[in-house]
Image (cartoon, helix red, strand yellow):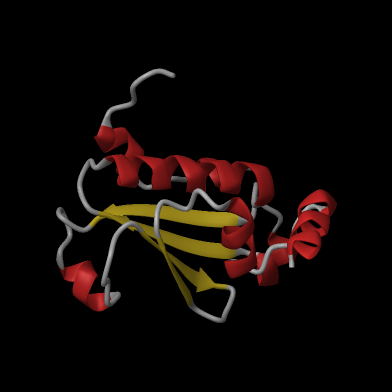
Length: 127
């Protein structure tokens, strides 16, 4: 894996927007990922949310990655209690997900995304 500068990781991310269909505006996602500095957890969260966007939300997401050390006023505005924190602003309901976002199934459930059939079957079997 190659090293990416942290500044490149936290800049406004529009990569997931390609191929957007305006007719599907009701299912567009607005996500904010709040991180604190260059910690390993912050890096993992950035990589995990980008992977999720690329695999499940391509063309339907506006993802913004914010370092609250550089923009501390946002920590208060969004009531940040821990980082990394992913905020699902749209579609409603508003959600907060805390952690490095490595549990893809839990993340997809929190974002109300349909799970692939194999994941759904695995979840049912483990209950």
